[in-house]
Image (cartoon, rainbow, N blue to C red; front, side, top):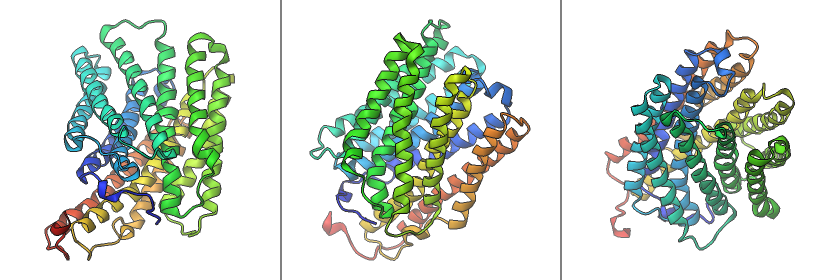
Length: 426
């Protein structure tokens, strides 16, 4: 690994990001059960309540929690940006987001106004606390690298996505849906997927691929221009959606082209890495490239079929995001445990590669990929849906165990005496 340019002495307490990482698979398990007890006909409509709840169990509960935990860890290390009162910020935002998410799911499924109001307050305050804390921390950054600029851009898209989401949730509370509800929902979903999650993934890959995989560095054009070009496409999507909806295909093509290019670039860089060792995280990056390519194509293709395939596009692009996120969890979590134990003076500890059982990681990979393939086939073979849901549930259970395993090592080692007394260096 190449740790050049990292401010490891700025890292937050281990439980700041880990509380988010440990919670995320639990929401994945919940989403799997919701899929299992639903049916393919209902889920084929992106506007059905079941689809909305399942989508947000994955986007807020799984993707959102991992992204927020990752930014909590990455900003101090990659940019030297300390999040103010990081322990309090992560604790309270985590609690509020958990409460807000659960009450949102219950409120929508039960059509319960009180639950929806609780979720509105919980999600709104939880997201605003942590996203504004991240923005405040970025004010202290002196060296705005490509990764830091991407994180800043992602957070700004995230804030607007949250505000649009709160507007949509308020529609269910007030029972008044304006004529713009569907348009806001479309912009909200595209900005969440490509603006918040997509741009963050691209920015982090600038640092992660060379660091963890000793892959060639990204060219200056990629690092300096691509995030801005994607942002321009997303703003164009917003403008056209509200004023010239018949021309939104232009923005779709713009966004899709640059994500296609990113998928191709990732594949090529993995082929050219200096240490071509295959592990499950490489499989995840390659799977993500395939999912993204197919998903972007179906998203464009869907324009000519009156949005009949929009849910399939969402599954494929969701496969891209989840593949990257799970693959990075297998790198980040063991690294965090190893780093924090080292910092406390422990040297006789398992290596990063020994903290997660490789066979379990491979099992989890195959279960997750099989579930996504099954979800796509369930459009044509509804009986496949429940089998795919079970595969997804088991993949999330194994993932939860694989994340807990390094933390159990951490707690076990802490009960022993350090090899070195690091207190003199504090």
